[in-house]
Image 1: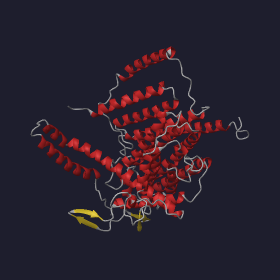
Image 2: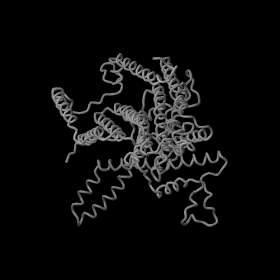
Image 3: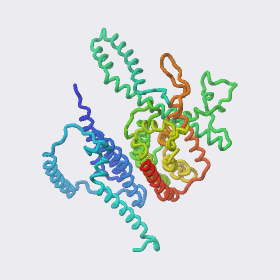
Image 4: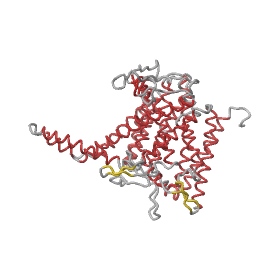
Length: 181
Length: 409
């Protein structure tokens, strides 16, 4: 009996990821939703390992599982009046939300069939190295980022920097005399 | 120049497991005389994939026991004994002579005047037999799962951390990056733990801890970037190997080894050590725990072994931090092997790499203990000021200096 362990691992991880993402959305308690978000992001990273991209997996753990759920929980905690204050429970059958979900699912299914069908997907994972020192085949992540897409990297850095400066400005606007309108 | 005591942990465990499974196989074959289907079980048990899987399980168990029993007890003993002696008192004293059974219960020896090594075992047993209290109106699922999160993310570090050039579970090419990513998973667990206990003091402690840990992750990663400009590799074995040769200054070889701390990386060393003191939540960056201010900080509501887990994992993170600092900047496990004995044909180095590594780890740990118990605690806004306004510019300076040295040659 020949078990395809990679496929089995992919199926198990996908079950965890889909269950985690559903639990993020339908959970009434926000901190539990943040925890399920962390689980979902970690399993997405584990699927990256199946694609032989362990650098992206580590960066996913570092950024997504390490910082984004903390950001979400900070946002929850700084906006609650009492500690365990939960948002009010909604009605049981949410008809408007269900129709929106069905419409979006139909649109997504149409797009998936039309985009994913004609693409020639490789049969097994192709390992893309972090840095490819040979100048002929620029297949490394660092090669693409700093040769072909260097302007995009600089623009993203400027965007993030301006976002942070804007955030500090908005936070300091309450204090009179510090920054003006 | 340096030689490991265990040249390959996987190989050594494979030999052991092959021997043990061989004996089990013989027993099964002997039993398969009256019961014929057992012969297939014996064949399957002796096949190579099964042996490999069992060997990996045993390797993981050996490393987990080595880390969380031997090294944890030793580092806790070092800390508790050292700070007690700094305070001119005896410190922990429960040792092997406190055991109530023969041959240790000699009446002419005092029972509680020993070296103190078994005190931590006694504390662990005490914590296990205490009641596990869950506060009323606490979020029970989150309260129970956050120690698991903290423990899991810390043990992930030890799957990748090598203890010599042969004693490791896995040798990742991106090992240092994986260790830093596993360190950055802990703030989520601490934040959820602080929130889920329905206690405003733990919430404050958890928020402060998450803010501090996240802001000190940035200079930590930047200091490692400054180092990687020199090493060109994130593999801990490669980084240690590059430090195993004598230091070259302008063409002449000095008699000191080429550790990265003896060079332009010294700025990175200082920044990384300070960031690691913050990641370990030690004094002076102790404000999340803050004894005598926040009771026990974010771990206040944890009782029994759950408290034992989060408390012990603070020390495991200290172990991992000292190991990381010594791998990156202090030459890891490189050191001269003075004598090599030959025991039954196997060369046994007298001072192997593991001993040099443990020496460095415990010297660093002693330095951090003396530092913690000498200087006062820093306030949280001062901590965040130091992290964002002082350490990040200095770490960027370290990157510039490293790049400049590398560009010049």
